[in-house]
Image 1 (tube, helix red, strand yellow):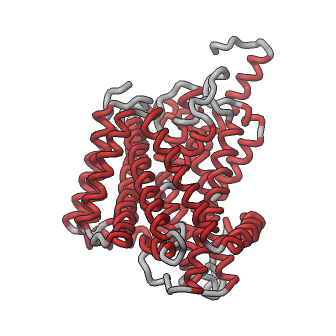
Image 2 (image 1 turned 180 degrees about the vertical axis):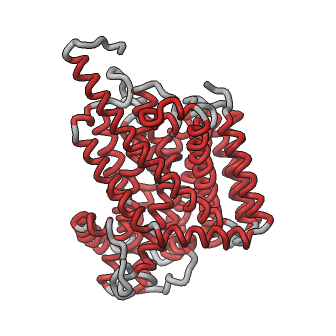
Image 3 (image 1 turned 90 degrees about the vertical axis):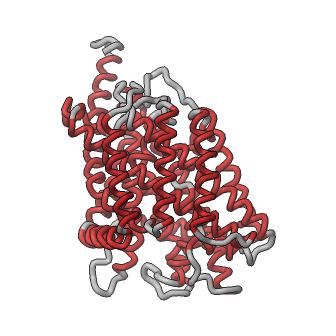
Amino acid sequence: MKKVTNVFYITLALITMAVLFGVIVPEQYETATENIQSFILTNFGWYYLLIMAAFVLVSLIIALSPYGRIRLGKDTDRPDFSTVTWVAMLFSAGMGIGLVFYGAAEPLTHYVVNPPTEEPGTEAALKDSLVSTYLHWGVPPWAMYGLTALALAFFQFRKNEPGLISATMKPIFGDKMNGPLGIAVDVLAVFATAFGVASSLGFGAVQINGGLNHLFGVEVGFAAQFAIISVVTVLFMISAWTGLSKGIKYLSNTNMVLAVLLLIFVVIVGPTLMILNLFTDTLGTHFQNLIQLSFRSAPLSGDNRSFVEGWTIFYWAWWISWAPFVGMFIARISRGRTIREFLLVVIFVPTLFSTFWFASFGTTAAHVQDTAMDLSGLASELVLFNVFEHLPLSIILSGIAILLIASFFITSADSATFVLGIQSTNGSLTPPNQVKLIWGITQSGIAALLLYVGGLQAIQNTIIIAALPFSIILILMTYSTFKALKQERHRMEELAKGKITRNK
C-alpha cells in the first residue's frame, strides 16, 4: 500500500514542465493561461453556477434522507477526533489563510470599488458587499467539499477501497478505474492539489511579509518572502513528520484559538454595535436570497457581469480546484461519523463562523474607510494591517494576525503533504515521511520560484483551467456515491431482515 505509484512520477513530471514554462517565459505563460481562463469564465459561467447550486441541493437531500443514518465506516466505528478538534481541522484545511487575506479586503472591495448591484460607497452597497461575500465563502463551497469528502470517506471506510478519487467512481466504471483512466483522474487531482496549495503558500508569504513590513519595516520583496517560505517549510515538515494525530491536530486547535481571539478583539475594539447589527441584518438577507444569489449570472448589458465573472464564477472554479485536497483531508479525519452529522456540520458550522468573520472584519474596514482613511487603493495583503492601525491595541492585533497566518500557512502545507502522500501511494492512510518530504519541498519550491518571477497569477490561472475537467469528475463522483448509497441502504435492510449475513 505504501509503494509509490505512477501517479507520483507522472504528476511530478507535469508539475516540473509547468513550473519551467512559468520560470523561463513567465509573461507568455501568464498571457496564455489568462486567455484560457477568461474564455472559461465567460463561456462556462452558467455551468459553474448550476453545478454549485446542484451540489447544495444534493448534499441536503442526502443529509436529510434515510441515507443520513449510514456511518462513514463500520457500524461499530466511532470518531477518531473530538467534535471541536474535528471542526478545527476541517476549517483550517478548507479556508485557512484566505479568511485572513480577504477578511477585510473582499467586503471593502465590494463596498467601494466594484459592488455587485449598488452604487459604490452607499449603505446599500455595504450590505450588498457582505451578502455577496457570505455566498463566496459559505454554503455552496462547503456543500461541494462535503460531497467530495463524503464520497471519499464512504468508499474508503465503508467499502474498504483505497483513499483515491478514482476509487469513488468504481460503481460507474468498474475495474477500468484500476487502469490508465483511474491514473488520469488521480493525476489531475494531485496536480490541482499541488498547485492550489503552492499558490496559497505564495499568498501567505506575501501577507506575512506585508505584516512584518507594517510592524517592523521589513522590506517587501522576494528575499523576505523566500526567507518566510524557508522557515515555514522547516516547521510544517517537522509537523508532517509527527503525523496526523499530533502535528495537524495541535496546529488546527491553535488556529481556532488564535482566530477566535483575533475575532473577539476586533468585535470589542471595532464598531461593535454596527458589526452585530449588520451581521444580523445581512445574514437574514443572505439566507432569504440564497437561491437567487446562487443563480445570479448577470446576463444583460445593464447587469454587473464583471462582478459575477471576476468574483462568484472565479470563486466557484477556485473552490472546485481545491476539492481533491480539502475533500480528501476532511474524509480522512471524519471516520466514524454518520452521514447526516458529517454533512450538516461540514456545511453549516464553517459557514456561520465565516459569515461572522467577514461581517466583523468587513464592517470594521468599511468604518475605517468612511471615518479615517481611504483603503481602496491598497494591495489586499495590506488592507487588514492598515485597518488595525486605526483601532486600539493595533500592535497586538497585527501580531496575532501574523501568528494566525503563519499557523494557517503551516497547517495547509502540512495537510497538503499528507493528502498528496495518500494520493501518490495508492491511498495509504499513513504515507511514508520521505514521500511527504518530497511533496513539501515541491510545494514550497513552486511558491518560491513563482514569487521570484512574478508568476503567482499564472498559477492561479492554471488552477482555474484545471477546475473545468475536474468539475466533471465531481459530478461523476456524486452520481457514483448516490448509486453506492442506494445499494448500501438495500444491503442494510436485507441485513435487518436476516436475509443476508453481516460479512456480506
